Every structure is written in C-alpha cells, then in structure tokens.
Image (cartoon, rainbow, N blue to C red; front, side, top):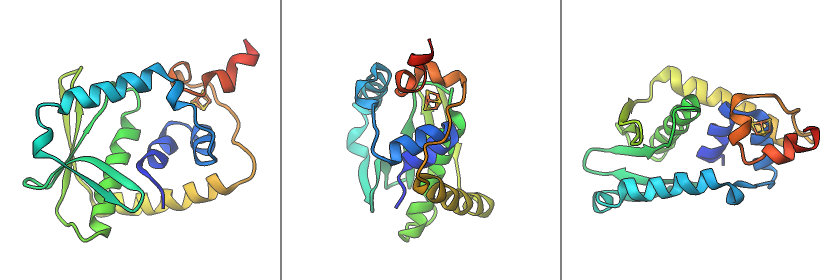
Length: 167
Ligand code: SF4
C-alpha cells in the first residue's frame, strides 16, 4: 500500500519518488527535514491532547481531531503545495476506504499564517485512483527516472546524489 509520501513525491519529482520507493532514503541527513519535524512538534505542542494518531495500513495520520473529523497537516512552505494537497486528499481517501466518512482536512502553514481547507470530491478520487496506478508502474520499473532541473532540487535531500558530480 502506498503512503502519503509516495503521493507527495509523485507531485514533486518522479525520480525522488523512485529513489524513495526503492529504499534509497537520504531524508535523515537533511537539515530542512529536521526543521520541518520540529515545526510540526512545536505547532501541535499545545493542541496535542485534542488530536489522535490514526494508522490505516502503512498510512499514519499524525493529527486527527475526532470531534470535528478533521485531519491537520502542517507544512513549512508552500513550495510544493500540490504535493501537500494531494497527500492530504489521499489521507481523506484512505479514511473513506476505512469507513470513516465525512472527514475533511486543513493544510496549515504556521510560518506564513495561512490555512487551507481541503475536501475530497469524486473527481479527486478518480484522479487518486489514476495516480496510484501510475505510481505503482513507476516505482516497479527497474531504471531510475532521469534527473530534471527543478527549483526544488537545491532543497532536495537527493541533491548531492543527482547533481554534485556535475558541478
Ligand atoms: S535533486 Fe531534483 S532531480 Fe534529484 S531527486 Fe531531488 S528533485 Fe528530483
């Protein structure tokens, strides 16, 4: 079963997705990821009691408010907003699959003081089913997809792996 990270990386970079899915992970060495995790902890420190963690297969939703049926997802910047959006919609889809109907989400960017409500439509589900198929094809191909110069490369944990030998 795919995780939210697979869905997010599909929207960020196909090469990053393939590397991640094939066990090549460098996130633990990234200071940016550390900052993101710290932000997550600080943002929810005062509200943690209201939220519960949900595990749906290998999908873990860290902050779910069962009273309002709302998933809260905190991000640092809006640089990969599409990835954030579809990751959260995937969580909503997985909740539907688990029989938890009527849930919604909120994307939170505390450093920017921005929140964005997120819902799941039938069209969203069709899109998710399509990309789930595409992701499974992509991650099972034997060859890593080629690198592409993207604005996010500089902040990607695979930057050295992809580009350092060229510089
Ligand atoms: S450095 Fe760029 S090309 Fe390489 S995996 Fe990251 S986003 Fe993709």
